[in-house]
Length: 305
Image 1 (cartoon, rainbow, N blue to C red):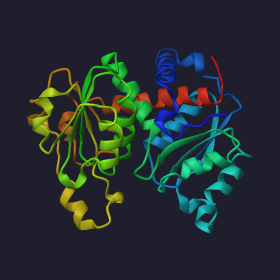
Image 2: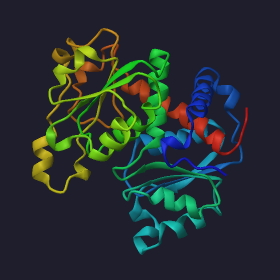
Image 3: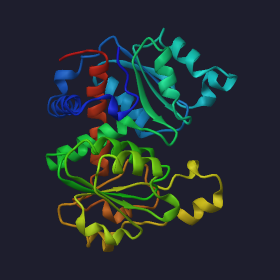
C-alpha cells in the first residue's frame, strides 16, 4: 500500500506516468468513467477548503466512485478530542482511500502510519501540499511541453506558502530550472528551503523585492496570496496583504508567452483585468487539478484502465 505525503514520494519517471494518465483522462474522460465504481473516497478536512476538497471529490465522482467525509474539524470527532490516529483507523473501516488536510504539519504522515487505506496529504500547515504540486507540474508540462529549461518566478508569501515549498522541492529534480524569488524581506523563503533544497542542489535562484525586476525573464509567474491564517497578528497581515498586485501595466513587462499561475484562492494579488489575458492560466490550472487527482486515485488504488 502506498500514500502520497510529499511530492518526493514519486520519482520523476513515476510523475511522468501520472501526468501521462492525467492527459489521457483529459482527452478520453468516458474511458475512465467507471474505473472506481464501488470505491469510496473519504475527505478529512480539518481546515477550510474549496478547490482541494471539491477537486478530490470531483475526481472520485468522475471515476464512478463515491465520497464521504467532513469539511471542518468542528463537524468531526476532533472537536471531542479524538486523535488523528483514531480518526483514520475508524475511517479505514468506511472508505477505500482518504484525503486529509490538517493545520498541523505532519498530521497526514501520522495518519498514514495508522491507516489501512492509502492517505493523500491535501495540505498540512505551512509544510507540504503535494497534490497542488502535482497540479502545478501537470499545468507547466501541458502548457510548455516540458518541465526542464524553464524560468519560474515565485511571488508573494514565500515564507508560509506550502504550495511554493512543495513546488521548489519538486522542480529542482529537473534540469536547468531557474527560480526568481519575489517577496518582501518579511516573507522571504525560509532558510531551510534555500539552503537544504536550492543551495544543496546547486540550483540557480535570485531573490528580488520588485516584481518588475523579474518579469521580463520568466516563462511562468506563480502568484500566491498572503495568507491571513498564517499570521500571528492582524497588523502584520494588513501591512503585507497588498504588497504585490499583478495588473495590466506589470503584465506589459512580461514575455508574450509567459503564463500566470496561482494555486487560488486569490484576494487582491491578481487584478481581475488579467483574467482575459491569454497568459492567465490559473483557472485552467484548477481544471488540471481534477485530472491529476483522478490519475493519483487510480494509482494509489492500483487500478489500471
